[in-house]
Length: 473
Image 1 (cartoon, helix red, strand yellow):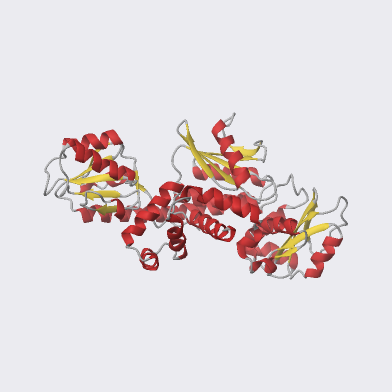
Image 2: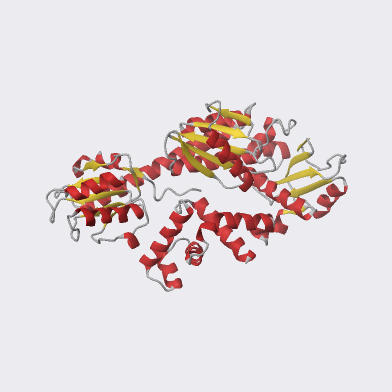
Protein backbone atom coordinates (compact mmCIF):
# COMPACT_ATOMS: atom_id res chain seq x y z
CA UNK A 1 0.00 0.00 0.00
CA UNK A 2 1.19 3.52 -0.76
CA UNK A 3 2.89 5.29 2.15
CA UNK A 4 1.82 8.77 3.18
CA UNK A 5 4.88 9.30 5.40
CA UNK A 6 6.23 12.11 3.19
CA UNK A 7 2.95 13.77 2.25
CA UNK A 8 3.19 16.99 0.28
CA UNK A 9 1.85 20.24 1.68
CA UNK A 10 1.66 23.61 -0.05
CA UNK A 11 3.20 26.91 0.99
CA UNK A 12 -0.34 28.28 1.13
CA UNK A 13 -1.15 25.88 3.97
CA UNK A 14 2.01 26.94 5.80
CA UNK A 15 1.18 30.62 5.32
CA UNK A 16 -2.18 29.96 6.99
CA UNK A 17 -0.34 29.17 10.26
CA UNK A 18 -0.71 32.72 11.55
CA UNK A 19 1.67 32.51 14.50
CA UNK A 20 4.56 31.99 12.06
CA UNK A 21 3.87 35.35 10.37
CA UNK A 22 5.35 34.20 7.04
CA UNK A 23 5.14 36.07 3.74
CA UNK A 24 5.65 35.01 0.10
CA UNK A 25 7.68 37.47 -1.98
CA UNK A 26 8.31 35.56 -5.23
CA UNK A 27 6.52 32.90 -7.29
CA UNK A 28 3.33 31.10 -6.21
CA UNK A 29 2.04 30.16 -2.78
CA UNK A 30 0.73 26.87 -4.20
CA UNK A 31 4.18 25.29 -4.46
CA UNK A 32 4.28 21.78 -2.94
CA UNK A 33 6.95 21.01 -0.34
CA UNK A 34 8.11 17.85 1.39
CA UNK A 35 9.63 18.87 4.71
CA UNK A 36 11.72 21.86 5.88
CA UNK A 37 15.51 21.88 6.23
CA UNK A 38 17.76 24.69 7.61
CA UNK A 39 21.13 25.02 5.86
CA UNK A 40 23.61 27.91 5.61
CA UNK A 41 25.97 26.38 3.03
CA UNK A 42 26.41 28.28 -0.26
CA UNK A 43 26.02 24.91 -2.05
CA UNK A 44 23.63 22.66 -0.06
CA UNK A 45 22.92 20.28 -2.94
CA UNK A 46 24.66 17.20 -1.42
CA UNK A 47 22.34 17.46 1.58
CA UNK A 48 19.04 17.75 -0.27
CA UNK A 49 16.57 15.22 -1.64
CA UNK A 50 14.33 17.67 -3.51
CA UNK A 51 11.03 19.28 -2.65
CA UNK A 52 12.25 20.84 0.63
CA UNK A 53 11.56 24.27 2.06
CA UNK A 54 15.19 25.32 2.51
CA UNK A 55 15.64 27.75 5.40
CA UNK A 56 18.64 30.13 5.52
CA UNK A 57 19.62 33.33 7.30
CA UNK A 58 22.12 34.10 4.53
CA UNK A 59 25.16 33.75 6.77
CA UNK A 60 27.56 33.02 3.88
CA UNK A 61 25.64 34.69 1.04
CA UNK A 62 27.20 37.53 -0.89
CA UNK A 63 24.51 40.17 -1.64
CA UNK A 64 25.58 40.70 -5.26
CA UNK A 65 23.76 39.80 -8.47
CA UNK A 66 26.19 37.10 -9.68
CA UNK A 67 26.57 35.11 -6.44
CA UNK A 68 22.85 35.33 -5.70
CA UNK A 69 21.95 34.17 -9.20
CA UNK A 70 24.32 31.21 -8.92
CA UNK A 71 23.01 30.31 -5.45
CA UNK A 72 19.40 30.25 -6.62
CA UNK A 73 20.38 28.26 -9.73
CA UNK A 74 21.95 25.59 -7.50
CA UNK A 75 18.78 25.35 -5.42
CA UNK A 76 16.61 25.04 -8.52
CA UNK A 77 18.91 22.35 -9.91
CA UNK A 78 18.58 20.43 -6.64
CA UNK A 79 14.79 20.52 -6.90
CA UNK A 80 14.23 22.71 -3.83
CA UNK A 81 10.54 23.46 -3.40
CA UNK A 82 10.95 26.91 -1.86
CA UNK A 83 13.49 29.13 -0.12
CA UNK A 84 12.72 30.50 3.35
CA UNK A 85 14.88 33.57 4.14
CA UNK A 86 15.32 34.61 7.76
CA UNK A 87 15.47 38.35 8.37
CA UNK A 88 17.80 38.07 11.38
CA UNK A 89 20.55 38.16 12.49
CA UNK A 90 22.49 38.84 9.25
CA UNK A 91 19.95 40.72 7.11
CA UNK A 92 17.05 42.95 8.13
CA UNK A 93 15.50 43.02 4.66
CA UNK A 94 15.59 40.61 1.75
CA UNK A 95 18.50 41.41 -0.59
CA UNK A 96 17.07 42.75 -3.84
CA UNK A 97 19.50 40.57 -5.80
CA UNK A 98 18.10 37.44 -4.10
CA UNK A 99 14.50 38.43 -4.72
CA UNK A 100 15.18 39.16 -8.40
CA UNK A 101 17.05 35.87 -8.84
CA UNK A 102 14.17 33.89 -7.30
CA UNK A 103 11.61 35.68 -9.45
CA UNK A 104 13.59 35.10 -12.65
CA UNK A 105 14.23 31.40 -11.96
CA UNK A 106 10.77 30.62 -10.59
CA UNK A 107 11.81 29.72 -7.04
CA UNK A 108 9.27 30.58 -4.36
CA UNK A 109 10.76 32.95 -1.76
CA UNK A 110 9.35 32.93 1.74
CA UNK A 111 10.14 35.62 4.33
CA UNK A 112 10.69 34.37 7.88
CA UNK A 113 10.61 37.20 10.45
CA UNK A 114 13.20 37.33 13.21
CA UNK A 115 10.54 36.52 15.76
CA UNK A 116 9.92 33.11 14.16
CA UNK A 117 12.62 30.49 14.82
CA UNK A 118 13.37 28.05 12.03
CA UNK A 119 12.52 25.15 14.32
CA UNK A 120 8.95 26.48 14.57
CA UNK A 121 8.68 26.43 10.77
CA UNK A 122 10.05 22.87 10.62
CA UNK A 123 7.61 21.73 13.30
CA UNK A 124 4.65 23.36 11.52
CA UNK A 125 5.55 21.64 8.24
CA UNK A 126 5.84 18.27 10.02
CA UNK A 127 2.44 18.74 11.66
CA UNK A 128 0.84 19.68 8.34
CA UNK A 129 2.37 16.58 6.75
CA UNK A 130 1.01 14.39 9.54
CA UNK A 131 -2.47 15.90 9.12
CA UNK A 132 -2.29 15.41 5.35
CA UNK A 133 -1.13 11.80 5.77
CA UNK A 134 -4.02 10.99 8.12
CA UNK A 135 -6.50 12.66 5.77
CA UNK A 136 -5.02 10.65 2.89
CA UNK A 137 -5.46 7.40 4.78
CA UNK A 138 -9.09 8.23 5.58
CA UNK A 139 -9.73 9.21 1.98
CA UNK A 140 -8.20 5.97 0.72
CA UNK A 141 -10.27 3.86 3.12
CA UNK A 142 -13.50 5.54 2.00
CA UNK A 143 -12.57 5.18 -1.67
CA UNK A 144 -11.70 1.49 -1.25
CA UNK A 145 -15.12 0.83 0.24
CA UNK A 146 -16.93 2.76 -2.49
CA UNK A 147 -14.93 1.17 -5.33
CA UNK A 148 -15.52 -2.35 -4.00
CA UNK A 149 -19.24 -1.71 -3.60
CA UNK A 150 -19.46 -0.38 -7.17
CA UNK A 151 -18.45 -3.78 -8.57
CA UNK A 152 -21.49 -5.55 -7.11
CA UNK A 153 -24.03 -3.81 -9.39
CA UNK A 154 -25.36 -4.61 -12.85
CA UNK A 155 -22.72 -2.55 -14.71
CA UNK A 156 -19.71 -3.02 -12.44
CA UNK A 157 -16.97 -1.42 -14.50
CA UNK A 158 -19.00 1.64 -15.43
CA UNK A 159 -19.98 2.07 -11.79
CA UNK A 160 -16.39 1.67 -10.63
CA UNK A 161 -15.14 4.29 -13.09
CA UNK A 162 -17.84 6.73 -11.97
CA UNK A 163 -16.83 6.26 -8.34
CA UNK A 164 -13.17 6.67 -9.26
CA UNK A 165 -13.83 9.95 -11.08
CA UNK A 166 -15.77 11.28 -8.09
CA UNK A 167 -13.04 10.21 -5.66
CA UNK A 168 -10.32 11.90 -7.72
CA UNK A 169 -12.32 14.99 -8.64
CA UNK A 170 -11.47 14.52 -12.32
CA UNK A 171 -12.41 12.36 -15.30
CA UNK A 172 -11.51 8.77 -16.17
CA UNK A 173 -11.73 6.61 -19.26
CA UNK A 174 -10.99 2.95 -20.01
CA UNK A 175 -9.41 2.25 -23.41
CA UNK A 176 -8.83 -1.01 -25.24
CA UNK A 177 -5.61 -2.04 -26.97
CA UNK A 178 -6.55 0.01 -30.07
CA UNK A 179 -7.41 3.20 -28.17
CA UNK A 180 -11.18 2.74 -28.42
CA UNK A 181 -13.24 3.92 -25.45
CA UNK A 182 -14.74 1.03 -23.46
CA UNK A 183 -16.22 3.05 -20.60
CA UNK A 184 -15.59 6.17 -18.60
CA UNK A 185 -17.00 9.08 -16.65
CA UNK A 186 -16.92 12.81 -17.42
CA UNK A 187 -14.17 12.34 -20.02
CA UNK A 188 -13.88 14.89 -22.86
CA UNK A 189 -14.96 13.97 -26.36
CA UNK A 190 -12.73 13.90 -28.30
CA UNK A 191 -10.06 12.70 -25.91
CA UNK A 192 -6.83 14.71 -25.79
CA UNK A 193 -4.41 13.48 -28.42
CA UNK A 194 -1.71 13.41 -25.75
CA UNK A 195 -3.67 10.83 -23.76
CA UNK A 196 -3.98 8.50 -26.74
CA UNK A 197 -0.20 8.74 -27.26
CA UNK A 198 0.37 7.95 -23.58
CA UNK A 199 -2.11 5.06 -23.76
CA UNK A 200 -0.37 3.56 -26.79
CA UNK A 201 2.99 3.80 -25.04
CA UNK A 202 1.55 2.29 -21.85
CA UNK A 203 -0.24 -0.52 -23.66
CA UNK A 204 2.98 -1.74 -25.28
CA UNK A 205 5.33 -1.32 -22.30
CA UNK A 206 3.08 -1.98 -19.26
CA UNK A 207 4.64 1.14 -17.69
CA UNK A 208 2.53 4.07 -16.45
CA UNK A 209 3.01 7.42 -18.19
CA UNK A 210 2.05 11.01 -17.35
CA UNK A 211 1.95 14.33 -19.16
CA UNK A 212 0.41 17.78 -18.79
CA UNK A 213 -1.66 19.21 -21.66
CA UNK A 214 -3.63 22.48 -21.56
CA UNK A 215 -3.30 22.61 -17.79
CA UNK A 216 -4.67 19.08 -17.29
CA UNK A 217 -2.50 16.38 -15.74
CA UNK A 218 -2.96 13.21 -17.83
CA UNK A 219 -2.15 9.75 -16.50
CA UNK A 220 -2.19 6.44 -18.38
CA UNK A 221 -1.98 3.21 -16.36
CA UNK A 222 -1.99 -0.40 -17.65
CA UNK A 223 -4.86 -2.45 -16.25
CA UNK A 224 -3.13 -5.74 -16.98
CA UNK A 225 -4.35 -8.94 -18.53
CA UNK A 226 -4.41 -10.13 -22.10
CA UNK A 227 -6.80 -7.38 -23.21
CA UNK A 228 -4.07 -4.71 -22.79
CA UNK A 229 -6.59 -2.22 -21.44
CA UNK A 230 -5.40 1.19 -20.28
CA UNK A 231 -6.94 3.44 -17.63
CA UNK A 232 -6.73 7.14 -18.48
CA UNK A 233 -7.15 9.86 -15.83
CA UNK A 234 -7.43 13.62 -16.21
CA UNK A 235 -6.86 15.94 -13.23
CA UNK A 236 -6.71 19.71 -12.93
CA UNK A 237 -3.86 19.34 -10.41
CA UNK A 238 -0.84 17.20 -9.67
CA UNK A 239 -1.87 13.82 -8.20
CA UNK A 240 -0.83 13.36 -4.58
CA UNK A 241 -0.05 10.18 -2.67
CA UNK A 242 -3.69 9.44 -1.87
CA UNK A 243 -4.68 9.96 -5.52
CA UNK A 244 -2.08 7.42 -6.60
CA UNK A 245 -3.19 4.96 -3.93
CA UNK A 246 -6.84 5.25 -4.98
CA UNK A 247 -5.89 4.70 -8.63
CA UNK A 248 -3.88 1.62 -7.60
CA UNK A 249 -6.94 0.18 -5.82
CA UNK A 250 -9.11 0.83 -8.88
CA UNK A 251 -6.55 -0.86 -11.14
CA UNK A 252 -6.45 -3.92 -8.90
CA UNK A 253 -10.25 -4.19 -8.96
CA UNK A 254 -10.43 -3.62 -12.72
CA UNK A 255 -7.79 -6.28 -13.28
CA UNK A 256 -9.45 -8.78 -10.97
CA UNK A 257 -13.01 -8.15 -12.08
CA UNK A 258 -14.45 -9.86 -15.12
CA UNK A 259 -16.36 -7.56 -17.51
CA UNK A 260 -19.82 -8.79 -18.39
CA UNK A 261 -19.06 -8.48 -22.10
CA UNK A 262 -16.25 -11.05 -21.58
CA UNK A 263 -17.82 -13.50 -19.09
CA UNK A 264 -21.53 -12.96 -19.58
CA UNK A 265 -22.46 -15.96 -17.46
CA UNK A 266 -20.58 -14.80 -14.38
CA UNK A 267 -23.29 -13.71 -11.97
CA UNK A 268 -23.33 -10.83 -9.51
CA UNK A 269 -22.72 -13.49 -6.88
CA UNK A 270 -19.45 -14.44 -8.57
CA UNK A 271 -18.42 -10.79 -8.71
CA UNK A 272 -19.10 -10.42 -5.00
CA UNK A 273 -17.18 -13.63 -4.39
CA UNK A 274 -14.12 -12.23 -6.12
CA UNK A 275 -14.40 -9.18 -3.91
CA UNK A 276 -14.27 -11.41 -0.89
CA UNK A 277 -17.72 -11.59 0.69
CA UNK A 278 -17.21 -14.44 3.22
CA UNK A 279 -20.92 -14.93 3.90
CA UNK A 280 -21.71 -15.33 0.18
CA UNK A 281 -18.91 -17.86 -0.33
CA UNK A 282 -19.66 -19.80 2.84
CA UNK A 283 -23.32 -20.12 1.84
CA UNK A 284 -22.37 -21.21 -1.67
CA UNK A 285 -19.71 -23.76 -0.77
CA UNK A 286 -20.75 -24.72 2.77
CA UNK A 287 -17.28 -23.83 4.02
CA UNK A 288 -15.32 -20.69 4.89
CA UNK A 289 -12.35 -21.60 2.69
CA UNK A 290 -9.57 -21.37 1.87
CA UNK A 291 -10.37 -20.97 -1.83
CA UNK A 292 -8.51 -21.14 -5.13
CA UNK A 293 -9.01 -19.40 -8.47
CA UNK A 294 -8.69 -21.51 -11.63
CA UNK A 295 -8.35 -19.61 -14.90
CA UNK A 296 -8.03 -21.17 -18.34
CA UNK A 297 -7.95 -20.45 -22.06
CA UNK A 298 -8.85 -22.71 -24.95
CA UNK A 299 -5.80 -24.33 -26.54
CA UNK A 300 -7.78 -26.08 -29.29
CA UNK A 301 -10.55 -24.80 -31.60
CA UNK A 302 -13.20 -27.00 -29.93
CA UNK A 303 -12.30 -27.79 -26.31
CA UNK A 304 -14.37 -30.20 -24.26
CA UNK A 305 -16.67 -28.86 -21.50
CA UNK A 306 -14.84 -27.68 -18.38
CA UNK A 307 -15.15 -30.37 -15.72
CA UNK A 308 -14.49 -28.86 -12.30
CA UNK A 309 -16.48 -29.74 -9.20
CA UNK A 310 -17.56 -26.21 -8.24
CA UNK A 311 -20.81 -24.20 -8.23
CA UNK A 312 -18.92 -21.11 -9.40
CA UNK A 313 -17.56 -21.46 -12.93
CA UNK A 314 -18.09 -19.28 -16.01
CA UNK A 315 -17.07 -20.12 -19.58
CA UNK A 316 -17.28 -17.65 -22.44
CA UNK A 317 -15.31 -16.57 -25.49
CA UNK A 318 -12.67 -19.26 -25.23
CA UNK A 319 -11.89 -18.59 -21.54
CA UNK A 320 -13.13 -19.80 -18.20
CA UNK A 321 -12.88 -18.65 -14.61
CA UNK A 322 -13.76 -20.73 -11.55
CA UNK A 323 -13.63 -20.52 -7.76
CA UNK A 324 -12.98 -23.73 -5.79
CA UNK A 325 -12.93 -24.41 -2.06
CA UNK A 326 -10.22 -27.06 -2.26
CA UNK A 327 -6.76 -27.76 -3.63
CA UNK A 328 -6.42 -28.41 -7.34
CA UNK A 329 -4.29 -31.40 -8.23
CA UNK A 330 -1.80 -31.29 -11.07
CA UNK A 331 -3.69 -34.21 -12.58
CA UNK A 332 -6.82 -32.04 -12.86
CA UNK A 333 -4.94 -29.35 -14.73
CA UNK A 334 -3.44 -32.02 -16.98
CA UNK A 335 -6.92 -33.43 -17.67
CA UNK A 336 -8.16 -29.96 -18.60
CA UNK A 337 -5.16 -29.60 -20.92
CA UNK A 338 -5.99 -32.88 -22.65
CA UNK A 339 -9.53 -31.59 -23.06
CA UNK A 340 -8.28 -28.47 -24.85
CA UNK A 341 -7.91 -26.03 -21.92
CA UNK A 342 -4.60 -24.51 -20.81
CA UNK A 343 -5.30 -23.74 -17.16
CA UNK A 344 -3.60 -22.26 -14.11
CA UNK A 345 -4.55 -22.17 -10.45
CA UNK A 346 -3.84 -19.64 -7.73
CA UNK A 347 -2.46 -20.27 -4.29
CA UNK A 348 -4.93 -20.98 -1.46
CA UNK A 349 -6.52 -17.67 -0.39
CA UNK A 350 -9.05 -16.40 2.08
CA UNK A 351 -12.21 -14.69 0.87
CA UNK A 352 -10.64 -11.25 1.29
CA UNK A 353 -7.67 -12.16 -0.95
CA UNK A 354 -9.58 -13.68 -3.87
CA UNK A 355 -9.57 -10.50 -5.95
CA UNK A 356 -5.79 -10.32 -5.75
CA UNK A 357 -5.49 -14.05 -6.43
CA UNK A 358 -7.66 -13.68 -9.55
CA UNK A 359 -5.44 -10.84 -10.76
CA UNK A 360 -2.31 -12.95 -10.31
CA UNK A 361 -3.76 -15.81 -12.35
CA UNK A 362 -3.68 -13.50 -15.38
CA UNK A 363 0.12 -13.41 -15.14
CA UNK A 364 0.22 -17.14 -14.49
CA UNK A 365 -1.81 -17.77 -17.64
CA UNK A 366 0.63 -15.69 -19.69
CA UNK A 367 3.42 -17.82 -18.26
CA UNK A 368 1.52 -21.01 -19.05
CA UNK A 369 1.15 -19.95 -22.67
CA UNK A 370 4.88 -19.27 -22.86
CA UNK A 371 5.66 -22.72 -21.40
CA UNK A 372 2.91 -24.49 -23.31
CA UNK A 373 1.68 -26.34 -20.23
CA UNK A 374 -0.50 -25.81 -17.13
CA UNK A 375 0.94 -23.86 -14.23
CA UNK A 376 0.27 -24.15 -10.51
CA UNK A 377 0.91 -21.08 -8.33
CA UNK A 378 3.08 -23.05 -5.89
CA UNK A 379 5.19 -24.27 -8.78
CA UNK A 380 6.13 -20.70 -9.67
CA UNK A 381 6.68 -19.53 -6.09
CA UNK A 382 10.35 -20.48 -6.12
CA UNK A 383 10.90 -18.46 -9.28
CA UNK A 384 9.10 -15.47 -7.77
CA UNK A 385 7.97 -12.64 -10.00
CA UNK A 386 10.84 -13.27 -12.40
CA UNK A 387 9.29 -16.61 -13.26
CA UNK A 388 6.15 -14.91 -14.56
CA UNK A 389 7.91 -12.78 -17.17
CA UNK A 390 9.57 -13.97 -20.35
CA UNK A 391 13.30 -13.15 -20.74
CA UNK A 392 12.61 -10.89 -23.73
CA UNK A 393 9.93 -8.94 -21.89
CA UNK A 394 12.15 -8.68 -18.82
CA UNK A 395 15.05 -7.37 -20.90
CA UNK A 396 12.89 -4.72 -22.58
CA UNK A 397 11.40 -3.69 -19.23
CA UNK A 398 14.84 -3.31 -17.61
CA UNK A 399 16.26 -1.48 -20.62
CA UNK A 400 13.36 1.01 -20.71
CA UNK A 401 13.62 1.82 -17.00
CA UNK A 402 17.41 1.96 -16.64
CA UNK A 403 18.46 3.50 -19.96
CA UNK A 404 18.98 7.02 -18.43
CA UNK A 405 21.53 5.54 -16.00
CA UNK A 406 23.67 4.01 -18.76
CA UNK A 407 27.25 5.26 -18.66
CA UNK A 408 27.04 6.36 -15.02
CA UNK A 409 28.08 4.76 -11.73
CA UNK A 410 24.62 5.25 -10.22
CA UNK A 411 23.07 1.85 -10.88
CA UNK A 412 25.15 0.08 -8.22
CA UNK A 413 24.29 2.72 -5.61
CA UNK A 414 20.59 2.47 -6.47
CA UNK A 415 20.69 -1.33 -6.20
CA UNK A 416 22.25 -1.28 -2.71
CA UNK A 417 19.94 1.57 -1.56
CA UNK A 418 16.84 -0.37 -2.61
CA UNK A 419 18.17 -3.58 -1.07
CA UNK A 420 18.47 -1.71 2.23
CA UNK A 421 14.90 -0.38 1.93
CA UNK A 422 16.12 3.20 1.52
CA UNK A 423 18.17 3.18 4.74
CA UNK A 424 20.82 5.88 4.25
CA UNK A 425 23.21 4.80 7.00
CA UNK A 426 23.27 1.11 6.08
CA UNK A 427 23.64 1.83 2.35
CA UNK A 428 26.42 4.39 2.82
CA UNK A 429 28.33 1.98 5.07
CA UNK A 430 27.96 -0.86 2.56
CA UNK A 431 29.15 1.32 -0.32
CA UNK A 432 31.91 2.93 1.73
CA UNK A 433 30.78 6.50 1.01
CA UNK A 434 29.55 9.41 3.10
CA UNK A 435 25.80 9.56 3.66
CA UNK A 436 25.58 12.95 1.92
CA UNK A 437 27.41 11.58 -1.10
CA UNK A 438 24.85 8.78 -1.26
CA UNK A 439 21.97 11.27 -0.99
CA UNK A 440 23.44 13.24 -3.88
CA UNK A 441 23.71 10.06 -5.99
CA UNK A 442 20.12 9.00 -5.32
CA UNK A 443 18.88 12.50 -6.11
CA UNK A 444 20.74 12.29 -9.45
CA UNK A 445 18.97 8.98 -10.07
CA UNK A 446 15.61 10.62 -9.34
CA UNK A 447 16.28 13.46 -11.77
CA UNK A 448 17.66 11.21 -14.53
CA UNK A 449 14.76 8.77 -14.32
CA UNK A 450 12.11 11.42 -13.68
CA UNK A 451 10.39 9.32 -11.02
CA UNK A 452 9.21 9.74 -7.43
CA UNK A 453 11.47 7.49 -5.33
CA UNK A 454 9.15 7.96 -2.35
CA UNK A 455 6.51 5.97 -4.26
CA UNK A 456 6.61 2.31 -3.18
CA UNK A 457 5.42 1.13 -6.60
CA UNK A 458 8.26 3.00 -8.35
CA UNK A 459 10.79 1.39 -6.01
CA UNK A 460 9.28 -2.01 -6.75
CA UNK A 461 9.49 -1.49 -10.51
CA UNK A 462 13.11 -0.35 -10.25
CA UNK A 463 13.99 -3.37 -8.11
CA UNK A 464 12.52 -5.71 -10.73
CA UNK A 465 14.33 -3.83 -13.51
CA UNK A 466 17.67 -4.07 -11.69
CA UNK A 467 17.16 -7.78 -11.06
CA UNK A 468 16.30 -8.51 -14.67
CA UNK A 469 19.15 -6.31 -15.91
CA UNK A 470 21.53 -8.26 -13.69
CA UNK A 471 20.30 -11.58 -15.11
CA UNK A 472 20.60 -10.29 -18.67
CA UNK A 473 24.15 -9.18 -18.06
